[in-house]
Image 1: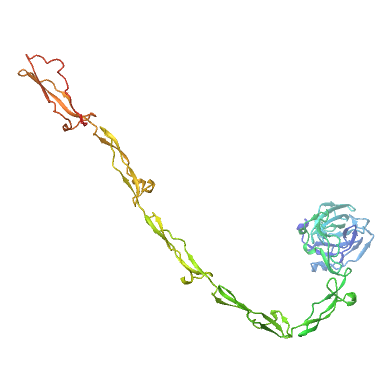
Image 2: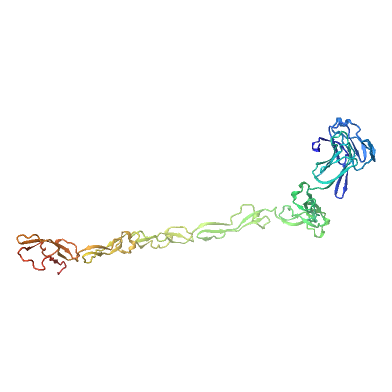
Length: 563
């Protein structure tokens, strides 16, 4: 049966107060001072244990039968040696005063339990020693291992380090392995605290006071370090509520000096003349705290009273002098006078001393008696739209030298308000053409004419004044026949007819032609039109004379004058 399966109860607290012995910087707890004894809560008969080599027994067996927990009332039975009877033989065993002897009963394990009082690493060391036994022997365990012990005097030891949290426990157990009876086993356990694994705060020495006179502050470094390495860690690694103060404040006076402090002068008794004014004077320490007058040098003590002039009880009134002659300008004239604030003793006082409404020291009235006036002309207007001669006009107003318009009578002769001008802004422009000039020709020729841009008043103008898109043409190709001549032209001859009665005929085609070769009306040709047929004799009639047949008779008509 393992310890994790046992139902334990604490039945004995060996010593009520922890016994701690210092070993270097560690703290040590031994088995006499800070361990609990655990046994099965169902045990119905007493068990025994020995403290410091002395056998103790439980006097009242009913304690375990009736209660879950009780304090064992021990009595001394033996001291120095223990003689158990094993297998019918009595054995003498020296008792180790550093051991706690456990006597497990009724099959169940019994354990010494160490509970860590605080977080840290502990060295757990000690051992087990069997005193007497039944044949089964006992199994001892110490948290990190276990061993079976079966002979009287047989022992084992252990030593190991373990990190424990506050309240975490380690059991050092003796298990009788189910034997009905008990084995007496000595247990020696020592728990040595090696140190906390948690970071700790480390402080440096205090610095100088910030001042030697008055409320002063001094500081020191506070660093979070690892408990074993000494390495500097971030402050968040240490517990904030355990952080030592990094500064402190205290009153310091060793460097104080003393001087007189004078308050502001107090108010005077109302008067109209001389009176006495006083103030408080005290000796003050350099940190601003008051001190006795004896601490300050008497020869430098400021006066605490003085004679001063006070006019707070005086009366004040305004006094106005006579008006001066006015100073005239165009538009206004101004006159002035002296206005003074008089104190009741006759002295002139600052204006702020008089509370009544201050009389005017100057006044201004409208005055145009010295003004001059002149004509102011506008710019000439643009000429009225025209196409030729027109006029340009302007306006005029009579203006006083202060800029106000006045009647025309205030100004002299007026200049002309109208002048002649020339304007062509209303003109229209159009194209004008001359007659055609055609050279004599027979066929197609080019005739020309003049094209001009004229203003509406008939004056010639540049071509770009007229609409270029509507400009008439200045030349063109035309047909002309005035230079042609006309002639009768034989254009074809027919075949001779059959001979009849000794005669044959044939047709002759004749056409009036222009000198360019084109056909023309017959009326344009002069002279008689040639015959349209021809006759000859045939049969016994002699043949025509050579050169006559096929001839073309041409008649010309010259159209030119003199031909």
